[in-house]
Length: 100
Image (cartoon, rainbow, N blue to C red; front, top):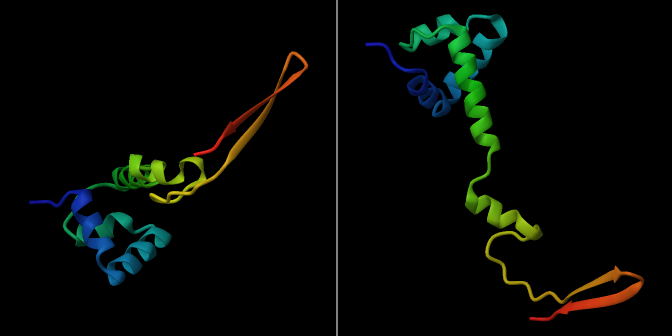
């Protein structure tokens, strides 16, 4: 039975030797042969499509990661910051102050 692209991807990610082999296969145009040696019958286009999908997954932030970067905060830090915003509406200055 043939392995899936995801199965060989997981194998490659766990092994520095396989990572080097993958990079060499990609550079020399022998990616299909490399995949076949690992037991996967996918063609080069299928492998490249899979890898592009993985790359896009890695670029997306999880909700937890978004919470960490929202507002420039990292993690669950509790920063006591006084915020003052000056807004000019119809020529009148209005100050909004937020003090926790």
